[in-house]
Image 1 (cartoon, rainbow, N blue to C red):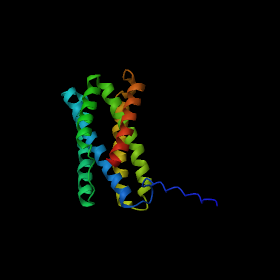
Image 2 (image 1 turned 90 degrees about the horizontal axis):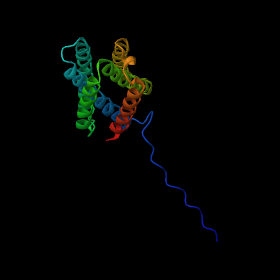
Image 3 (image 1 turned 90 degrees about the vertical axis):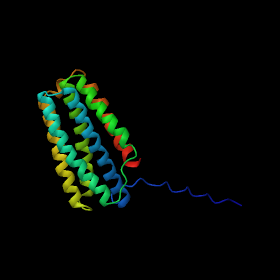
Image 4 (image 1 turned 60 degrees about the horizontal axis):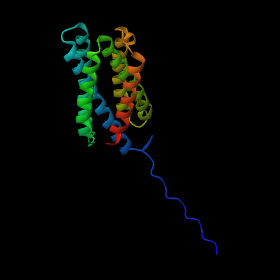
Length: 188
């Protein structure tokens, strides 16, 4: 007598396109975390840069990021989505990243902005494509935020981001950190 093979248990799938409320919660949670960290990065840069012309650029970018953060605060409340439990970590890490790169010099601070905003632009672009049909109003808001992030990146490049000592390495480390933070913030 031959035993029938036992079928494998289905592997739970990560929420993806079309997954509904769980995926939307991930999107809102991670975007809130990103804006929270961005505000802190620009604050850290301003503390080190003092009253320099660069500090004024960082202050303006911080104001825009604070608007984004306020909107995500509202969306989390409205849609009953919990923020990431890692928010205190991102607050501290963001400030340290901003201050640390500013201590390396103005061009390094701009290189930080370029790297962060490049990752965020790619991240938002994927979400916009994902939400275009399911939640076109949110997709439109994300598109507006993405365009502002691109403006930050472009300004950083104009201000010499790519001339920073060790630009390639600095950019690679910051990019990897941002991508890891995105993955963690979606779930935790």
